[in-house]
Length: 83
Image (cartoon, rainbow, N blue to C red; front, top):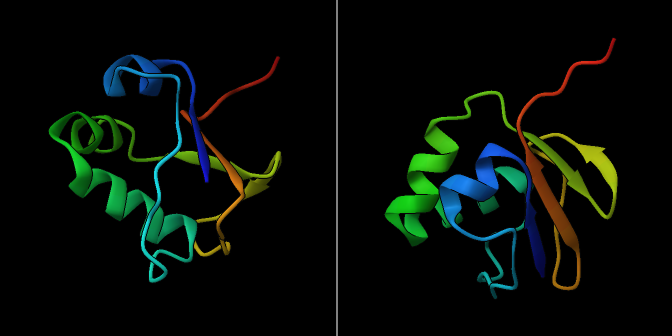
């Protein structure tokens, strides 16, 4: 699985990209967030600082209940606005 972090999340986590191997029980975006937050204090702080976290799975916007699997690309970013 490839995880991408953008904007303030990348700065808070300290990397823009990582390739962890979560256990099989981590099968949704929400469970992935929880698992990553438990992985390190930096991850926990990054996700706590962004309560309205946005995600995309394989470049398609996804909710916290969206399924994830080995080989997916999951991107996390703060909410964005357009104008």
